[in-house]
Length: 103
Image (cartoon, rainbow, N blue to C red; front, side):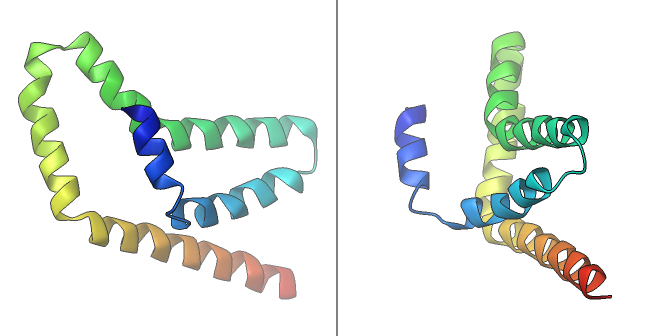
């Protein structure tokens, strides 16, 4: 099931577009330690939406059904607003870093 979801997400380029600035920041990091730390943060942020629900179901089996259903319903009802907020934050970040590099 997870593989099917992954394959279906490939057609959505917005997730890849949002990773490009992070990969650029890692590539231009001043030293290996900062680049490595940024890579770890990137992996944690990128994998947390997949791994956290699995961990919750694993550790809180029966008690997690209702709260997880509510979270699912909320994210499905507000998915475009969530994507809009994330894209706006990314745009602000890119604008600020772009402006700083020009000045």
